[in-house]
Image 1 (cartoon, each protein chain N blue to C red):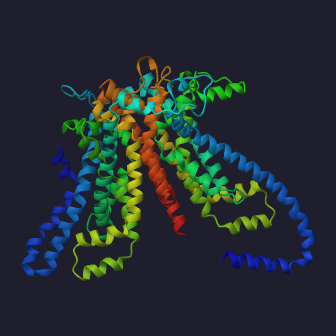
Image 2: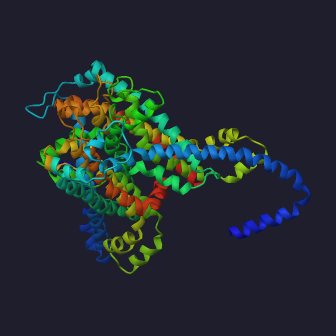
Image 3: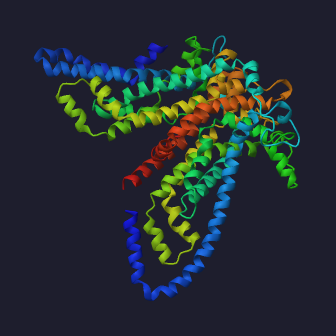
Amino acid sequence: MVTGIASSLPGAERTPPRKHRTPARLGGTGPLSRSARRWLTIVVFLLPALVVLGTFNFWPMIDALRLSFTDASGFGREEFVGLDNYLQVFTDSAIVRSMGNTVWYAVLFTPTAVVVALALALALNHPRLPLRGFFRTWLFLPFIVSLAVAAFAWQYLLDPQVGLVNYWLQTFGIRIGNVLQDPALAMPTVALIAVWKSFPFYMIVFLAGLQEIPPSLYEAARVDGASNWSRFRHITLPLLGNTTGFVLVIATIAALQAFDQIYILTGGGPYRSTQTVVMQIYESGFKNLELGFASALSYVLLVATLLLGLVQFALSSRRAKDAAA
Amino acid sequence: MSQVTSLARDASHHHAVPERSARGRRRRRVPLRERVSGLMLFVAVVAVTAITVLPIAIIVLTAFKPVAEVNAFPPTLAPTDWTLDNFGRIFNDLPFARLILNSFVFAGGVTLLALCFDSLAAYVLARIDFRGNRVLLIAIIASLMIPFQALLIPVYQVIADLGWINTYWGLILPRAADAFGIFFLRQFFLSLPQDLDSAARLDGASEARIYWSIALPNAVPALLTLGVYTFVNNWNDLLWPLVLTTDAQMGTITSGLTQLTGPGGIIPFGVMMAGSLIALIPLAIIFLFLQRRFVASVASTGLK
């Protein structure tokens, strides 16, 4: 299997140029054998990366497509089943629900994370805020903590019996109960935990964008007597547009891949209210061994992500152009 | 330089004497409003920072709490009796020493191999103009957009066919080269001045030599950034080790800790926080030393 991939790799296309070596060598000696050596270098340098990417990236993409049209289960013969798996993806109510849940998660996660990140970036960029370096360091901290470890910490904090958050809220007369077992609150909770983990990265991207806005613009607006809000509305927001678009897209892509904290905190429950697409792929593929079906669902995820990725690509090239200008 | 500007400001103030009274009145009014809004901003940022740090604080503090305090009501933030019991128990409840080793082998192995393979490929893509260069680059950028989660099943199948379930090779090799890393380092190599290697080339140095003694030494900052990013991501990963290791001895710290929840959903929080704290230590060390540089490069390259 591996050799089959190696020969289908783009790197293998590079053998033909080497054929020219023989006739070329007849003509001269030095510079032409150098060209052969050059090709050899190119192949040797590229080969390790291309073998890895080919075996674990390009080939699996093709293989997943093939699997998605079969009833593969890891055992016995795989039968071709046509579009049955895809039909099931879009008709099985549990699967449709998992896609709906993922969209709901994205709706909860993406705007919250982007607004929190932008607000904190604006705050950290404010000239009147003291100790900016100190705050930036501590606010960046969740970036290095894994979502799994964050989930453990929040699980303890939110515990209905011994959790501090419940206890503190109770002193204000607010009872939230066992949020992770509440079908209405479980999803917002796991989405908020992801916001906690993700906002520092988006915040840093926003900070970089803010620092590219020339201060002279704000000076001019101040001279014209523009209010804080109108300076934000008419200078910051438009000039930050590409950065905001970029952050929105990568946050949405991240939302489509939600898994870690959900696996740990709710396992997709209660009543499958937090069952996301990746949770479903995990369950179908590794618990129920429906590899064919899980591959079809994977492909739906892949196409959704690719579409968002194209948007991101367009945005980031626009961003690069802005940076160059 | 700041001295110069402050001098200039002083000078302009001296010239502005006639206007002073009018300006002074306005200045007194504005600072008050701005001071109040500045204070509100400060309080808000302090509050958000406190909420942000709370889960990390709870990990550190709970790790040193005795069981009775962990499950006490009303709950407390800090332990009154500091103890190391939880750290003893985590090594008892899980093969934790082995999990720590596995985490280092997995994250460290991926990082070393990926830096090596990525930089080799990136060097050729950036510095040598050959037929197919562009096509390859486009293929690599395209694969950048494919989420790992969507390839979980076929990649697992490849590893299973190779007989590498529950092995280090199985964990490491699928990530030993990374489209993002190649792209990132290629951009860096492109930014290095060409004069250096054209001089070396004139002297008859081989590409391997230029790569090793010119390109790599100059790329240390980029390699460090990519290395930290790769290490942190893999150290923190849950899904891949969870799927690939069924043997409790082959998991990582992250995947191992998910096995702590006992039947009936009773969670030994103290032990879990002790394990989480140990998982955080290498990251905290990296963070302390590289925070500034890492924040700067995250901002400029948009790596996530």
